[in-house]
Image (cartoon, rainbow, N blue to C red; front, side):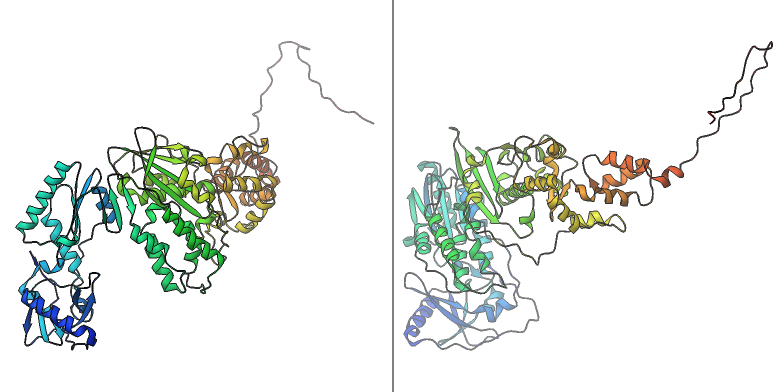
Length: 606
Protein backbone atom coordinates (compact mmCIF):
# COMPACT_ATOMS: atom_id res chain seq x y z
CA UNK A 1 0.00 0.00 0.00
CA UNK A 2 1.54 3.28 -1.14
CA UNK A 3 0.43 6.91 -0.87
CA UNK A 4 1.32 9.77 -3.21
CA UNK A 5 1.12 13.50 -2.52
CA UNK A 6 0.39 15.39 -5.72
CA UNK A 7 2.12 18.78 -6.00
CA UNK A 8 1.98 20.77 -9.26
CA UNK A 9 5.37 21.24 -11.01
CA UNK A 10 7.27 24.51 -10.68
CA UNK A 11 5.81 25.22 -7.22
CA UNK A 12 8.13 27.30 -5.02
CA UNK A 13 9.31 25.11 -2.05
CA UNK A 14 8.50 26.33 1.44
CA UNK A 15 10.96 26.00 4.31
CA UNK A 16 10.23 26.93 7.96
CA UNK A 17 12.62 26.77 10.88
CA UNK A 18 11.94 24.67 13.98
CA UNK A 19 9.70 26.14 16.65
CA UNK A 20 10.88 26.20 20.27
CA UNK A 21 9.26 23.56 22.47
CA UNK A 22 8.06 23.86 26.09
CA UNK A 23 10.80 22.49 28.34
CA UNK A 24 8.35 20.03 29.91
CA UNK A 25 7.67 18.44 26.50
CA UNK A 26 11.13 18.56 24.92
CA UNK A 27 12.30 15.22 26.31
CA UNK A 28 9.08 13.42 25.31
CA UNK A 29 9.28 14.87 21.81
CA UNK A 30 12.86 13.72 21.36
CA UNK A 31 11.95 10.25 22.65
CA UNK A 32 9.11 10.03 20.15
CA UNK A 33 11.44 11.15 17.34
CA UNK A 34 13.84 8.39 18.31
CA UNK A 35 11.05 5.82 18.36
CA UNK A 36 9.78 6.86 14.94
CA UNK A 37 13.31 6.76 13.55
CA UNK A 38 13.94 3.23 14.92
CA UNK A 39 10.56 2.11 13.56
CA UNK A 40 11.54 3.28 10.10
CA UNK A 41 8.86 5.95 9.99
CA UNK A 42 11.34 8.87 9.98
CA UNK A 43 14.66 9.23 8.16
CA UNK A 44 17.12 12.05 9.01
CA UNK A 45 18.18 14.27 6.11
CA UNK A 46 20.95 16.87 5.88
CA UNK A 47 19.29 19.14 3.34
CA UNK A 48 15.77 19.83 2.11
CA UNK A 49 14.01 22.56 0.16
CA UNK A 50 10.84 21.77 2.09
CA UNK A 51 10.44 21.85 5.87
CA UNK A 52 7.49 22.23 8.23
CA UNK A 53 7.61 22.98 11.98
CA UNK A 54 6.18 20.31 14.28
CA UNK A 55 3.14 20.40 16.55
CA UNK A 56 3.27 17.84 19.42
CA UNK A 57 -0.18 16.53 20.46
CA UNK A 58 -0.82 14.66 23.72
CA UNK A 59 -3.29 11.80 23.11
CA UNK A 60 -5.97 10.58 25.54
CA UNK A 61 -3.77 7.70 26.74
CA UNK A 62 -0.92 10.10 27.63
CA UNK A 63 1.28 9.20 24.66
CA UNK A 64 2.61 11.82 22.27
CA UNK A 65 1.83 12.27 18.59
CA UNK A 66 4.12 14.42 16.45
CA UNK A 67 2.41 16.23 13.59
CA UNK A 68 4.01 18.48 11.05
CA UNK A 69 2.34 21.86 10.57
CA UNK A 70 1.87 21.25 6.86
CA UNK A 71 -0.73 24.01 6.59
CA UNK A 72 2.12 26.45 5.91
CA UNK A 73 3.97 24.20 3.45
CA UNK A 74 2.68 21.37 1.25
CA UNK A 75 -1.04 21.65 2.13
CA UNK A 76 -1.12 25.17 0.70
CA UNK A 77 0.02 24.04 -2.75
CA UNK A 78 -0.82 20.31 -3.12
CA UNK A 79 -3.81 18.93 -4.99
CA UNK A 80 -6.39 17.76 -2.47
CA UNK A 81 -7.48 14.13 -2.66
CA UNK A 82 -11.28 14.49 -2.60
CA UNK A 83 -12.13 10.84 -2.03
CA UNK A 84 -15.31 11.05 0.10
CA UNK A 85 -15.51 9.84 3.66
CA UNK A 86 -18.60 7.65 4.23
CA UNK A 87 -21.74 9.09 5.81
CA UNK A 88 -22.25 7.87 9.35
CA UNK A 89 -25.88 6.95 8.52
CA UNK A 90 -24.72 4.72 5.66
CA UNK A 91 -22.30 2.85 7.91
CA UNK A 92 -24.94 2.10 10.53
CA UNK A 93 -27.43 1.05 7.86
CA UNK A 94 -24.88 -1.53 6.66
CA UNK A 95 -24.82 -2.98 10.20
CA UNK A 96 -28.55 -3.77 10.12
CA UNK A 97 -29.32 -7.31 11.22
CA UNK A 98 -26.15 -7.69 13.29
CA UNK A 99 -26.32 -9.39 16.70
CA UNK A 100 -22.64 -9.31 17.73
CA UNK A 101 -20.05 -6.65 16.94
CA UNK A 102 -16.27 -6.45 16.74
CA UNK A 103 -14.47 -3.10 16.62
CA UNK A 104 -10.93 -2.99 15.20
CA UNK A 105 -8.55 -0.05 15.60
CA UNK A 106 -5.50 0.28 13.37
CA UNK A 107 -2.18 1.20 14.98
CA UNK A 108 -0.90 4.62 13.83
CA UNK A 109 -3.32 4.36 10.92
CA UNK A 110 -1.80 6.69 8.33
CA UNK A 111 1.72 5.55 9.07
CA UNK A 112 0.88 2.07 7.79
CA UNK A 113 0.94 3.50 4.26
CA UNK A 114 4.34 3.83 2.57
CA UNK A 115 5.05 7.11 0.81
CA UNK A 116 6.05 7.11 -2.82
CA UNK A 117 9.72 8.19 -3.28
CA UNK A 118 8.76 11.48 -4.96
CA UNK A 119 6.41 12.42 -2.07
CA UNK A 120 8.87 12.05 0.84
CA UNK A 121 10.51 15.45 0.40
CA UNK A 122 7.16 17.22 0.90
CA UNK A 123 6.80 15.69 4.38
CA UNK A 124 10.10 16.98 5.81
CA UNK A 125 9.81 18.30 9.37
CA UNK A 126 12.20 20.69 11.13
CA UNK A 127 12.83 19.69 14.76
CA UNK A 128 15.26 20.40 17.59
CA UNK A 129 17.15 17.29 16.45
CA UNK A 130 17.36 18.40 12.81
CA UNK A 131 15.52 17.59 9.59
CA UNK A 132 13.57 14.37 9.02
CA UNK A 133 11.34 13.21 6.22
CA UNK A 134 8.64 10.60 6.57
CA UNK A 135 8.84 7.18 4.98
CA UNK A 136 5.14 6.70 5.66
CA UNK A 137 2.07 8.89 5.35
CA UNK A 138 2.11 11.37 8.27
CA UNK A 139 -0.71 13.00 10.20
CA UNK A 140 -1.42 16.58 9.15
CA UNK A 141 -1.37 16.10 5.37
CA UNK A 142 -4.68 17.44 4.04
CA UNK A 143 -5.12 14.55 1.59
CA UNK A 144 -4.34 11.86 4.20
CA UNK A 145 -7.99 11.06 5.17
CA UNK A 146 -9.06 10.62 1.53
CA UNK A 147 -5.95 8.59 0.66
CA UNK A 148 -6.38 6.27 3.64
CA UNK A 149 -10.16 5.85 3.19
CA UNK A 150 -9.68 4.85 -0.45
CA UNK A 151 -6.94 2.40 0.51
CA UNK A 152 -8.87 0.69 3.32
CA UNK A 153 -12.08 0.44 1.24
CA UNK A 154 -10.11 -1.08 -1.65
CA UNK A 155 -8.49 -3.54 0.75
CA UNK A 156 -11.84 -4.65 2.24
CA UNK A 157 -13.76 -4.56 -1.03
CA UNK A 158 -16.45 -7.25 -1.44
CA UNK A 159 -16.18 -8.45 2.18
CA UNK A 160 -19.62 -8.77 3.84
CA UNK A 161 -20.49 -7.46 7.30
CA UNK A 162 -17.69 -4.89 7.62
CA UNK A 163 -17.56 -1.08 7.42
CA UNK A 164 -14.64 1.30 7.82
CA UNK A 165 -14.36 4.95 8.78
CA UNK A 166 -10.66 5.76 8.22
CA UNK A 167 -8.91 3.59 10.83
CA UNK A 168 -12.03 2.43 12.75
CA UNK A 169 -13.43 -0.87 11.47
CA UNK A 170 -16.66 -2.53 12.59
CA UNK A 171 -17.53 -6.17 11.84
CA UNK A 172 -20.86 -7.91 12.44
CA UNK A 173 -22.97 -10.90 11.46
CA UNK A 174 -26.53 -12.15 11.88
CA UNK A 175 -25.30 -14.83 14.32
CA UNK A 176 -22.07 -15.88 16.02
CA UNK A 177 -21.05 -18.32 13.29
CA UNK A 178 -21.51 -15.79 10.50
CA UNK A 179 -19.80 -13.12 12.61
CA UNK A 180 -16.70 -15.30 13.04
CA UNK A 181 -16.62 -16.04 9.31
CA UNK A 182 -16.80 -12.34 8.46
CA UNK A 183 -14.16 -11.50 11.08
CA UNK A 184 -11.83 -14.23 9.77
CA UNK A 185 -12.06 -12.84 6.23
CA UNK A 186 -11.30 -9.32 7.47
CA UNK A 187 -8.32 -10.40 9.58
CA UNK A 188 -6.92 -12.46 6.70
CA UNK A 189 -7.19 -9.50 4.32
CA UNK A 190 -5.52 -7.14 6.84
CA UNK A 191 -2.73 -9.64 7.52
CA UNK A 192 -2.00 -10.08 3.82
CA UNK A 193 -1.55 -6.31 3.50
CA UNK A 194 0.69 -6.09 6.57
CA UNK A 195 -1.79 -3.97 8.54
CA UNK A 196 -1.40 -4.06 12.34
CA UNK A 197 -4.06 -3.50 15.01
CA UNK A 198 -3.90 -1.85 18.42
CA UNK A 199 -5.12 -4.62 20.71
CA UNK A 200 -5.98 -2.32 23.63
CA UNK A 201 -8.57 -0.48 21.49
CA UNK A 202 -10.10 -3.56 19.83
CA UNK A 203 -13.37 -5.07 21.11
CA UNK A 204 -14.41 -8.59 20.05
CA UNK A 205 -17.79 -10.34 19.86
CA UNK A 206 -19.71 -7.90 22.03
CA UNK A 207 -23.53 -7.42 21.87
CA UNK A 208 -23.12 -3.64 22.14
CA UNK A 209 -20.28 -1.40 21.02
CA UNK A 210 -19.58 2.33 20.84
CA UNK A 211 -18.74 3.45 17.32
CA UNK A 212 -18.43 6.99 15.95
CA UNK A 213 -20.15 8.56 18.96
CA UNK A 214 -23.06 6.09 18.94
CA UNK A 215 -23.84 2.85 20.71
CA UNK A 216 -25.01 0.13 18.33
CA UNK A 217 -26.66 -3.18 19.23
CA UNK A 218 -29.15 -5.59 17.65
CA UNK A 219 -32.07 -3.38 18.75
CA UNK A 220 -30.81 -0.29 16.98
CA UNK A 221 -28.87 2.89 17.54
CA UNK A 222 -28.38 4.90 20.76
CA UNK A 223 -26.47 8.11 21.48
CA UNK A 224 -23.20 7.64 23.32
CA UNK A 225 -23.80 8.08 27.07
CA UNK A 226 -20.40 9.71 27.43
CA UNK A 227 -21.30 12.33 24.83
CA UNK A 228 -24.78 12.75 26.34
CA UNK A 229 -23.20 13.33 29.74
CA UNK A 230 -20.88 15.95 28.24
CA UNK A 231 -23.87 17.77 26.77
CA UNK A 232 -25.85 17.51 29.99
CA UNK A 233 -22.97 19.03 31.97
CA UNK A 234 -22.26 21.81 29.46
CA UNK A 235 -22.65 25.28 31.01
CA UNK A 236 -24.70 28.01 29.39
CA UNK A 237 -22.74 29.65 26.55
CA UNK A 238 -21.32 33.10 27.25
CA UNK A 239 -20.50 34.04 23.64
CA UNK A 240 -21.22 33.05 20.03
CA UNK A 241 -18.21 30.74 19.81
CA UNK A 242 -19.34 28.66 22.79
CA UNK A 243 -22.89 28.57 21.44
CA UNK A 244 -21.67 27.24 18.08
CA UNK A 245 -19.73 24.49 19.87
CA UNK A 246 -22.83 23.44 21.81
CA UNK A 247 -25.05 23.49 18.71
CA UNK A 248 -22.50 21.47 16.74
CA UNK A 249 -22.37 18.79 19.44
CA UNK A 250 -26.11 18.45 19.97
CA UNK A 251 -26.93 18.58 16.25
CA UNK A 252 -24.78 15.48 15.77
CA UNK A 253 -27.60 13.66 17.56
CA UNK A 254 -30.45 15.50 15.82
CA UNK A 255 -31.72 12.26 14.25
CA UNK A 256 -32.67 11.06 17.77
CA UNK A 257 -34.87 14.11 18.50
CA UNK A 258 -38.11 14.87 16.73
CA UNK A 259 -38.33 18.64 17.14
CA UNK A 260 -34.79 19.81 17.76
CA UNK A 261 -34.81 22.59 15.16
CA UNK A 262 -37.78 24.33 16.75
CA UNK A 263 -36.44 23.86 20.27
CA UNK A 264 -33.16 25.51 19.26
CA UNK A 265 -34.82 28.29 17.27
CA UNK A 266 -34.19 31.02 19.92
CA UNK A 267 -30.52 29.99 20.08
CA UNK A 268 -30.10 30.16 16.32
CA UNK A 269 -31.41 33.73 16.34
CA UNK A 270 -28.37 34.69 18.41
CA UNK A 271 -26.18 33.67 15.45
CA UNK A 272 -27.72 36.20 13.08
CA UNK A 273 -25.27 38.82 11.90
CA UNK A 274 -27.45 41.69 13.11
CA UNK A 275 -28.10 40.13 16.55
CA UNK A 276 -26.35 41.40 19.65
CA UNK A 277 -25.43 38.83 22.29
CA UNK A 278 -28.07 38.94 24.98
CA UNK A 279 -28.85 35.69 26.84
CA UNK A 280 -32.45 35.74 28.10
CA UNK A 281 -34.89 33.44 29.85
CA UNK A 282 -36.10 32.13 26.46
CA UNK A 283 -32.57 31.06 25.60
CA UNK A 284 -32.16 29.28 28.93
CA UNK A 285 -35.45 27.44 28.37
CA UNK A 286 -34.38 26.34 24.88
CA UNK A 287 -30.93 25.32 26.14
CA UNK A 288 -32.33 23.15 28.95
CA UNK A 289 -35.17 21.71 26.84
CA UNK A 290 -32.67 20.50 24.23
CA UNK A 291 -30.68 18.75 26.95
CA UNK A 292 -33.80 17.07 28.33
CA UNK A 293 -34.87 16.01 24.84
CA UNK A 294 -31.54 14.26 24.27
CA UNK A 295 -31.71 12.57 27.66
CA UNK A 296 -35.11 11.04 26.80
CA UNK A 297 -34.30 10.35 23.13
CA UNK A 298 -35.71 7.28 21.38
CA UNK A 299 -33.81 4.16 20.32
CA UNK A 300 -33.53 4.17 16.52
CA UNK A 301 -34.22 0.87 14.81
CA UNK A 302 -31.86 -0.31 12.04
CA UNK A 303 -33.01 0.33 8.47
CA UNK A 304 -34.19 -2.88 6.82
CA UNK A 305 -35.12 -2.66 3.10
CA UNK A 306 -37.39 -5.70 3.47
CA UNK A 307 -39.68 -3.95 5.96
CA UNK A 308 -42.46 -1.47 5.21
CA UNK A 309 -41.43 2.19 5.39
CA UNK A 310 -43.59 5.02 6.71
CA UNK A 311 -42.93 8.76 6.60
CA UNK A 312 -44.93 10.95 8.99
CA UNK A 313 -44.80 14.67 8.20
CA UNK A 314 -46.20 17.73 9.92
CA UNK A 315 -45.86 21.50 9.81
CA UNK A 316 -46.57 24.25 12.30
CA UNK A 317 -46.50 28.02 11.95
CA UNK A 318 -42.74 28.04 12.58
CA UNK A 319 -41.28 24.61 11.78
CA UNK A 320 -41.34 21.29 9.92
CA UNK A 321 -41.02 17.82 11.40
CA UNK A 322 -40.68 14.30 9.99
CA UNK A 323 -40.29 10.75 11.29
CA UNK A 324 -39.00 7.91 9.15
CA UNK A 325 -40.10 4.58 10.61
CA UNK A 326 -40.53 0.87 9.94
CA UNK A 327 -43.97 -0.69 10.27
CA UNK A 328 -43.51 -4.01 12.08
CA UNK A 329 -45.57 -7.17 11.74
CA UNK A 330 -47.59 -6.37 14.87
CA UNK A 331 -48.65 -3.04 13.33
CA UNK A 332 -46.46 -0.89 15.56
CA UNK A 333 -44.05 1.69 14.14
CA UNK A 334 -40.41 2.05 15.25
CA UNK A 335 -38.45 5.18 14.28
CA UNK A 336 -35.40 4.98 12.03
CA UNK A 337 -34.61 8.70 12.18
CA UNK A 338 -36.13 12.07 13.03
CA UNK A 339 -35.68 15.34 11.17
CA UNK A 340 -36.84 18.90 11.74
CA UNK A 341 -36.07 22.46 10.77
CA UNK A 342 -37.50 25.92 11.26
CA UNK A 343 -39.31 27.87 8.54
CA UNK A 344 -37.63 30.79 6.85
CA UNK A 345 -39.38 34.18 7.05
CA UNK A 346 -40.67 33.72 3.49
CA UNK A 347 -41.94 30.19 4.21
CA UNK A 348 -43.89 31.43 7.23
CA UNK A 349 -46.09 33.33 4.78
CA UNK A 350 -47.12 30.12 2.98
CA UNK A 351 -50.70 28.93 3.31
CA UNK A 352 -51.26 25.96 5.62
CA UNK A 353 -51.64 23.51 2.73
CA UNK A 354 -48.32 24.74 1.31
CA UNK A 355 -46.58 24.42 4.68
CA UNK A 356 -47.84 20.85 4.98
CA UNK A 357 -46.70 20.16 1.41
CA UNK A 358 -43.30 21.67 2.21
CA UNK A 359 -43.01 19.30 5.19
CA UNK A 360 -43.45 16.32 2.85
CA UNK A 361 -40.89 17.63 0.36
CA UNK A 362 -38.41 18.36 3.17
CA UNK A 363 -38.83 14.83 4.57
CA UNK A 364 -38.53 13.11 1.19
CA UNK A 365 -35.34 14.99 0.34
CA UNK A 366 -33.90 14.44 3.82
CA UNK A 367 -34.44 10.67 3.66
CA UNK A 368 -33.92 10.26 -0.10
CA UNK A 369 -31.35 7.47 0.34
CA UNK A 370 -33.82 5.38 2.32
CA UNK A 371 -36.89 6.12 0.20
CA UNK A 372 -35.78 6.10 -3.41
CA UNK A 373 -36.47 2.75 -5.06
CA UNK A 374 -38.74 1.55 -2.19
CA UNK A 375 -42.48 1.91 -1.76
CA UNK A 376 -43.37 3.95 1.33
CA UNK A 377 -46.45 5.43 2.99
CA UNK A 378 -46.70 9.17 3.66
CA UNK A 379 -48.84 10.17 6.64
CA UNK A 380 -50.11 13.76 6.87
CA UNK A 381 -52.74 15.39 9.06
CA UNK A 382 -53.79 17.69 6.20
CA UNK A 383 -56.48 15.91 4.21
CA UNK A 384 -56.32 18.03 1.00
CA UNK A 385 -52.80 16.69 0.36
CA UNK A 386 -54.34 13.25 -0.26
CA UNK A 387 -55.77 14.68 -3.48
CA UNK A 388 -53.06 17.18 -4.39
CA UNK A 389 -50.24 14.63 -4.08
CA UNK A 390 -52.23 11.50 -4.90
CA UNK A 391 -50.05 8.91 -6.61
CA UNK A 392 -52.98 7.79 -8.78
CA UNK A 393 -54.46 11.16 -9.76
CA UNK A 394 -52.96 14.09 -11.67
CA UNK A 395 -52.37 17.27 -9.72
CA UNK A 396 -55.31 19.68 -10.24
CA UNK A 397 -54.68 22.13 -13.05
CA UNK A 398 -55.65 25.03 -10.82
CA UNK A 399 -53.23 24.10 -8.03
CA UNK A 400 -50.59 26.73 -7.32
CA UNK A 401 -47.34 26.54 -9.27
CA UNK A 402 -45.51 25.67 -6.03
CA UNK A 403 -47.76 22.66 -5.39
CA UNK A 404 -47.36 21.55 -9.01
CA UNK A 405 -43.54 21.68 -8.73
CA UNK A 406 -43.64 19.62 -5.54
CA UNK A 407 -45.97 17.07 -7.15
CA UNK A 408 -43.45 16.73 -9.98
CA UNK A 409 -40.68 16.10 -7.42
CA UNK A 410 -42.74 13.36 -5.75
CA UNK A 411 -43.45 11.68 -9.09
CA UNK A 412 -39.94 10.20 -8.97
CA UNK A 413 -40.87 8.14 -5.88
CA UNK A 414 -43.15 5.16 -5.33
CA UNK A 415 -45.48 6.08 -2.49
CA UNK A 416 -49.04 6.25 -1.23
CA UNK A 417 -50.32 9.11 0.90
CA UNK A 418 -52.75 8.62 3.77
CA UNK A 419 -54.54 11.00 6.09
CA UNK A 420 -53.79 10.59 9.80
CA UNK A 421 -55.14 13.01 12.46
CA UNK A 422 -52.55 15.12 14.24
CA UNK A 423 -53.23 13.30 17.50
CA UNK A 424 -51.88 10.12 15.89
CA UNK A 425 -48.86 11.65 14.15
CA UNK A 426 -46.85 11.39 17.35
CA UNK A 427 -43.41 12.93 17.22
CA UNK A 428 -43.91 14.63 13.86
CA UNK A 429 -46.83 16.58 15.30
CA UNK A 430 -44.80 17.68 18.33
CA UNK A 431 -43.70 20.71 16.31
CA UNK A 432 -47.25 22.04 16.25
CA UNK A 433 -47.59 21.76 20.02
CA UNK A 434 -44.18 23.04 21.09
CA UNK A 435 -44.73 26.20 23.20
CA UNK A 436 -42.34 28.57 21.48
CA UNK A 437 -42.74 32.33 21.45
CA UNK A 438 -44.01 33.60 18.12
CA UNK A 439 -41.21 35.13 16.11
CA UNK A 440 -41.78 38.62 14.71
CA UNK A 441 -42.07 38.82 10.98
CA UNK A 442 -39.11 40.27 9.17
CA UNK A 443 -40.37 43.49 7.65
CA UNK A 444 -37.26 43.90 5.50
CA UNK A 445 -38.05 40.83 3.42
CA UNK A 446 -39.50 41.88 0.04
CA UNK A 447 -42.92 40.51 -0.93
CA UNK A 448 -42.98 37.40 -3.08
CA UNK A 449 -44.43 39.44 -5.92
CA UNK A 450 -46.71 36.75 -7.37
CA UNK A 451 -49.83 38.86 -6.99
CA UNK A 452 -48.15 42.02 -8.25
CA UNK A 453 -46.93 40.08 -11.29
CA UNK A 454 -50.42 38.80 -12.10
CA UNK A 455 -52.15 42.12 -11.55
CA UNK A 456 -49.53 44.09 -13.46
CA UNK A 457 -50.11 41.93 -16.55
CA UNK A 458 -53.12 44.15 -17.07
CA UNK A 459 -51.70 47.32 -18.61
CA UNK A 460 -52.36 50.54 -16.68
CA UNK A 461 -54.00 48.54 -13.88
CA UNK A 462 -56.11 50.72 -11.60
CA UNK A 463 -55.87 48.30 -8.65
CA UNK A 464 -52.69 47.10 -6.95
CA UNK A 465 -51.82 43.96 -5.01
CA UNK A 466 -51.66 46.05 -1.83
CA UNK A 467 -55.20 47.34 -2.41
CA UNK A 468 -56.47 43.82 -3.11
CA UNK A 469 -54.91 42.59 0.15
CA UNK A 470 -56.57 45.47 2.06
CA UNK A 471 -59.96 44.84 0.46
CA UNK A 472 -59.60 41.10 1.09
CA UNK A 473 -59.07 41.79 4.77
CA UNK A 474 -62.24 43.93 4.88
CA UNK A 475 -64.36 41.55 2.78
CA UNK A 476 -66.60 39.54 5.13
CA UNK A 477 -66.40 36.39 3.00
CA UNK A 478 -62.87 36.52 1.58
CA UNK A 479 -61.33 37.43 4.94
CA UNK A 480 -62.71 34.20 6.40
CA UNK A 481 -61.59 32.25 3.32
CA UNK A 482 -58.10 33.67 3.88
CA UNK A 483 -58.28 32.53 7.51
CA UNK A 484 -59.37 29.02 6.50
CA UNK A 485 -56.49 28.73 4.00
CA UNK A 486 -53.94 29.63 6.67
CA UNK A 487 -55.40 27.65 9.57
CA UNK A 488 -57.39 24.85 7.96
CA UNK A 489 -60.90 24.45 6.57
CA UNK A 490 -63.86 23.11 8.56
CA UNK A 491 -65.18 19.68 7.63
CA UNK A 492 -68.40 21.11 6.20
CA UNK A 493 -69.20 24.33 4.36
CA UNK A 494 -70.02 26.94 7.05
CA UNK A 495 -72.38 29.01 4.88
CA UNK A 496 -73.79 28.92 1.32
CA UNK A 497 -71.76 32.05 0.51
CA UNK A 498 -68.60 29.98 0.99
CA UNK A 499 -69.67 27.12 -1.28
CA UNK A 500 -67.73 28.30 -4.42
CA UNK A 501 -64.58 28.56 -2.30
CA UNK A 502 -65.23 25.38 -0.33
CA UNK A 503 -65.43 23.40 -3.58
CA UNK A 504 -62.00 24.78 -4.55
CA UNK A 505 -60.37 24.63 -1.09
CA UNK A 506 -57.65 22.22 -2.26
CA UNK A 507 -56.61 24.69 -4.97
CA UNK A 508 -56.71 27.94 -2.99
CA UNK A 509 -53.58 29.56 -1.59
CA UNK A 510 -52.59 32.93 -0.18
CA UNK A 511 -49.72 35.28 -0.99
CA UNK A 512 -49.11 38.62 0.69
CA UNK A 513 -52.66 38.78 2.05
CA UNK A 514 -54.29 38.02 -1.31
CA UNK A 515 -56.21 34.82 -2.08
CA UNK A 516 -55.23 32.88 -5.21
CA UNK A 517 -57.06 30.14 -7.08
CA UNK A 518 -54.22 28.43 -8.84
CA UNK A 519 -52.40 31.35 -10.44
CA UNK A 520 -55.49 33.60 -10.59
CA UNK A 521 -56.10 36.34 -8.04
CA UNK A 522 -59.46 36.12 -6.26
CA UNK A 523 -60.90 39.65 -6.39
CA UNK A 524 -62.85 40.99 -3.37
CA UNK A 525 -66.36 42.34 -3.94
CA UNK A 526 -65.23 45.98 -3.61
CA UNK A 527 -62.79 45.73 -6.50
CA UNK A 528 -64.77 43.61 -8.94
CA UNK A 529 -66.40 46.51 -10.80
CA UNK A 530 -63.01 48.18 -11.15
CA UNK A 531 -61.45 45.01 -12.53
CA UNK A 532 -64.34 44.49 -14.97
CA UNK A 533 -63.89 48.09 -16.06
CA UNK A 534 -60.20 47.46 -16.64
CA UNK A 535 -60.84 44.24 -18.53
CA UNK A 536 -63.31 46.07 -20.79
CA UNK A 537 -60.96 48.99 -21.37
CA UNK A 538 -60.54 48.21 -25.08
CA UNK A 539 -64.16 47.05 -25.44
CA UNK A 540 -63.51 43.40 -26.29
CA UNK A 541 -66.44 41.07 -26.87
CA UNK A 542 -67.79 38.67 -24.28
CA UNK A 543 -65.64 35.70 -25.37
CA UNK A 544 -62.39 37.65 -25.58
CA UNK A 545 -63.05 39.37 -22.27
CA UNK A 546 -63.71 36.04 -20.53
CA UNK A 547 -60.52 34.58 -22.02
CA UNK A 548 -58.49 37.53 -20.73
CA UNK A 549 -60.04 37.34 -17.26
CA UNK A 550 -59.42 33.58 -16.95
CA UNK A 551 -55.68 34.18 -17.25
CA UNK A 552 -55.44 36.50 -14.26
CA UNK A 553 -58.50 36.85 -12.01
CA UNK A 554 -61.49 34.95 -10.62
CA UNK A 555 -64.50 35.38 -8.37
CA UNK A 556 -67.87 33.61 -8.14
CA UNK A 557 -70.11 34.84 -10.95
CA UNK A 558 -67.24 36.27 -13.03
CA UNK A 559 -68.71 35.12 -16.37
CA UNK A 560 -72.12 36.62 -15.60
CA UNK A 561 -70.55 39.96 -14.59
CA UNK A 562 -68.59 40.06 -17.84
CA UNK A 563 -71.67 39.28 -19.96
CA UNK A 564 -73.65 41.98 -18.16
CA UNK A 565 -70.87 44.55 -18.61
CA UNK A 566 -70.66 44.02 -22.36
CA UNK A 567 -74.42 43.99 -22.89
CA UNK A 568 -74.88 47.22 -20.94
CA UNK A 569 -71.99 49.09 -22.59
CA UNK A 570 -73.45 51.87 -24.75
CA UNK A 571 -70.35 52.11 -26.97
CA UNK A 572 -70.36 48.36 -27.60
CA UNK A 573 -74.07 48.31 -28.42
CA UNK A 574 -73.86 51.35 -30.74
CA UNK A 575 -70.91 49.87 -32.58
CA UNK A 576 -72.56 46.51 -33.11
CA UNK A 577 -73.21 45.85 -36.83
CA UNK A 578 -76.89 46.39 -37.89
CA UNK A 579 -78.81 43.28 -38.91
CA UNK A 580 -79.12 42.88 -42.68
CA UNK A 581 -82.22 44.46 -44.32
CA UNK A 582 -84.98 42.11 -45.40
CA UNK A 583 -85.25 41.88 -49.22
CA UNK A 584 -88.36 43.38 -50.89
CA UNK A 585 -91.01 40.82 -51.60
CA UNK A 586 -93.59 41.90 -54.27
CA UNK A 587 -97.17 40.88 -53.72
CA UNK A 588 -98.69 38.44 -56.15
CA UNK A 589 -101.21 39.91 -58.64
CA UNK A 590 -104.77 39.26 -57.33
CA UNK A 591 -107.01 37.04 -59.40
CA UNK A 592 -110.16 39.09 -58.74
CA UNK A 593 -111.19 42.37 -56.98
CA UNK A 594 -111.57 42.39 -53.19
CA UNK A 595 -109.65 39.13 -52.86
CA UNK A 596 -106.95 40.87 -50.61
CA UNK A 597 -107.36 44.09 -48.58
CA UNK A 598 -104.46 46.26 -47.22
CA UNK A 599 -105.17 48.66 -44.33
CA UNK A 600 -102.89 51.30 -42.74
CA UNK A 601 -103.50 52.11 -39.07
CA UNK A 602 -103.15 55.63 -37.71
CA UNK A 603 -103.83 57.19 -34.35
CA UNK A 604 -104.87 57.50 -31.67
CA UNK A 605 -105.52 61.16 -32.21
CA UNK A 606 -106.41 63.71 -29.56
